[in-house]
Amino acid sequence: MKKLTTVLLTSVIALWSVSAVQAGEIAVIVKTVNSTFWQNVQKGADAAMKNIKGETMTFQGPASESAIADQVNMVENAVNRKVDGIVLAPSDPDALLPAVKKAWEARIPVVLIDSQLAKGGEQYYQSFLATDNKKAGELAAEEMIKKVGKEGKIAVMSYVAGAGSEIGRVGGFVDYIKANSKLQIVGPYYSQSQMATALNQTTDVLAANPDLKGIFGANEPTAIGVGRALAQSGKSGKVVAIGFDGNEDLQNFVKDGTLSAIVVQGSYQMGEKGVETVEKLIKKEKVEKFVDTGVVVVTKDNIDKPEAKNVLY
Image 1 (spheres, rainbow, N blue to C red):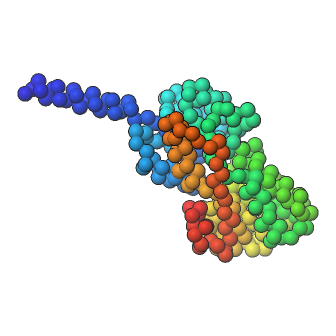
Image 2: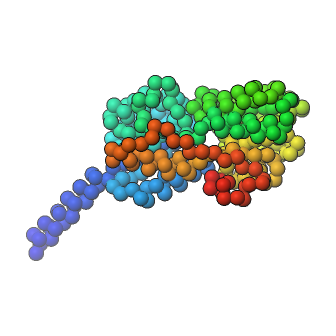
């Protein structure tokens, strides 16, 4: 009986060991974990994992978007762990390129979300899921012109210079303004995606430019800083402000008129589709090289409608 028990126990351990080996890892690595935007990406990733068998998911990111070396280490560590696939939102298009190349050399599929790699990186990843940031920036600029007219002065409050999403988004905004109006642009200023920095920068810009007609806050922490600076300086509703992304703070700013509009990305969709896409690649299925995850311009008029509720978080 003792011998039989030992044999059975050994069999159970052997079976457990095989299943443990078989459970592969999908590493989701974002720009920072300290932002509701990326936390909403995680919700989408978690939802996708419910339908995936034989894989576990790890979700990580640096303490801040400007901690680029930390993100590089996270990707390299995932490659060294021999994960089955990587979903990555690169903080810097150049700095992350060698790490993604290492994944490619190790035959680990990589799906990019939100931001692109530098030129030449196309061969090292299999799919890119993101907002068309240039188009999103143009939509913000169109909304700005609609609200302030074609003459006067506006400020651009950006986040991390050179980030893939920033190049397209702020570039799209600035180019559209220049091509379609005579508006004078102050900035861009870079908050490093720190709300407090954006608040201080906006406060200074408002003080130095009393004739300012509008402000564009180009990502979530920056737009929150813009909103708070407007509220604290008594300029809410007097200066047109367009934000980007859609957490609760930004929604409240739209509802109380501090922000005229927010351009909101499909962050949940990035997480969900990112994981689904990497799972297809693990199974050797074909995927699209680029998938547009879309944006919605949210104003007081449509904030309670389904089109907005689907993207707000």
